[in-house]
Amino acid sequence: MASSVTTCKILLFLMLVLAAYIILMATENFSKFPSVFILSTSSHCSDICNKSSCPEKPVSTATEPTETDLRIKEIIEQLDHQIPYRPFSHVNTTTSAAHSVAKIINPKTTYCTGDHLNILLEVRDYLGHRKQYGGDFLRSRISSPDLKAGASGQVTDFNNGTYLVNFTLFWAGKVSISILLMHPSEGVSALWRARKKAYDKVIFRGHFAKGTSQVFSKCSLVVDASAELCQYLDHRDQEAFYCVKPPQVSCDALTHMTARSSGVSYLSIKEKNLLHKSNVGVEIIRGFEPITVSQCNKVETVKEKCCVGMKSPIPSGYSLQGKWNPAFCKLTQLSNLNVINRCLKGKLIYFMGDSTLRQWIEQFPNIVKTLKHFDFHGNPPYKKYILLDTERHIHIQWKKHGHPFFTESLYSVKDNDYITREIDGIAGDRNTVIVITLGQHFRLFPVDLYIRRVINIQRAILRLWLRSPETRVILKAENIREMDTEAERFGDFHGYIQYLIMRDIFRDLNVGFIDAWDMTIAYDSRILHPPNNVVGNQINMFLNYIC
Image 1 (tube, rainbow, N blue to C red):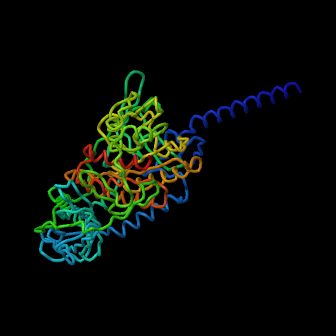
Image 2: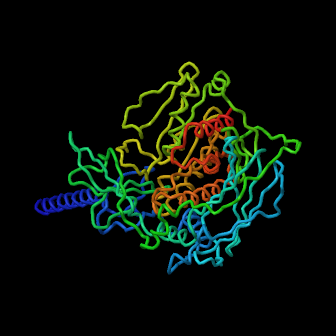
Image 3: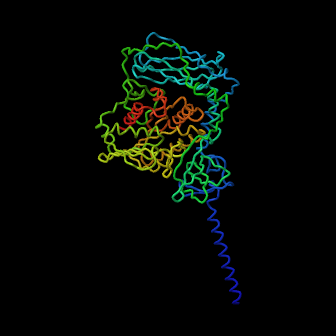
């Protein structure tokens, strides 16, 4: 009997040891399961995956298409319909600015302010034949250099080789007309096809801390199925970033990042020639004399003060004597320091986005002399910037947006968060203001990445308003940039598509909108970081929204 009891005890002990061993092995290997199957209680985390568990595309944590997935698909299908495939065998069959013809519809000897000037544009190829389809990327503008005046036009594509270009004549004086062929429809088609190809046009280089030294590793927005990876995932928003895991280094040791172009291109030689910088922004209007615009004793319509929630038309306004004038609201030139300080008193202002918004925080101390920089440490120019006025309890902050961020300069990812998570962390109240811009760093990647991010930001704003409906949110559109930049990666065609997407997704939200796209065309500032007078006018419109 005693022997039997002893045997049972030994067997029980062995079973307990075996169970403990199984639990230990499962625990050690838990992080190696595909992320799709991990139901994390954390909002975003870093995991490790191996070759068998990593798909060669951005991770989706849902087995069925989500509402966001379906919305992205819908938007891309709409864009595919608007940008059909336009192959060409020779450049002679593509749109030629020199051979295209423009004429004013119902010309007058004198126009009045507020009138519309309509131009019919017929595009032709290099052989002089009228094109039978549209899709050309055009940029239209009127200007009076002596008056420091400018405004964009609105282009209607009839999809048969003809376009209607409409200008609102906002000011009196001699007005010149410009219509630029940015890219022919065949070039637009090539750029759209190339953008959708892959995520490999950029190489990210992650810096991992290893004791007092550093190790480096390749990182990407998509997984490399041949390597063990660190995954930096946001399961809720289906956002992902990956790095090849350095040997014997924790995924949590990632500290900094740089990026460079990979040199990969999805354009053919003839497509590259078509999109060469010498063929970008070619003037179509030739031989047009400036038109004369008079005041005509017209009574100006009294506009309401610029307020958050107003709808911004196209064009959204015009510059005159270097000052911006919105077409849809009354703008005050705020220059009195006491007035601005009273407006900003007690306010928490968050700028979230890229370096075109960092320009604001760099210029603010020139406008509000009482604001002082607080050194938040980090690697300039992409560290967090903070301005403080402790006497008036004013706090203004700029922080870069999360991945992707393309720069060869070293930047920290220690506090790298997506804008959605930054918004989620803000309590909000009537003295809280958020300004968001997004786009320049997304031009290098398939557009679904941008669409997903904008949809996620829209939802974060709605969550913010549930807990703090008085918080004001203002969107700044992208700036136009240099025409001689590489069209496939950075060109304004990609920015224009993103501009239309942002306007569409946010059209029903009660946000303020600073149409920097339209403003930079009006000012003809063909540079990513426009001059101070343009930035100052963007800031002035922002102040009008909140003061």
